[in-house]
Image (cartoon, rainbow, N blue to C red; front, top):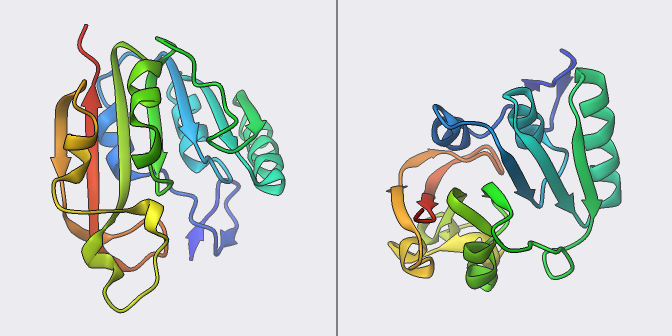
Length: 184
């Protein structure tokens, strides 16, 4: 069990995504979008680093918990109860967009347009190998080398497919990690 943000134990994973922390390091905080934010562990961490964070999720209870936690730790989050198909990503709007185990294959053009020049798209999801012997939703599973090909308008900052403890499910599996930057 991980300690949650108020110091009590919880079975909900509350530590921010390690890949996100690495990709945000050294970047000037700006506007960030957490797609499918769940209970907001990543959005809250970004807000604590000085980012102006918007997050959305279709789960009303998760968004309510996100706001409650943000209030407890003293950060501001803008939240919406929406699915990807209903959210207005805009154009040239975000300095960072995060997709942590929520897909990204179905809206590549939208996500690339939504980034400001110099903005980054950060994705972590399961590699196809992670589905061997277990059920994983197809939207969050990618094949070897697939992510960089899906985002041709972005410059690859980092791409890797390590075997590690996945944030989602807390099991040792192969994941994909992608960070792409919109050219200035």
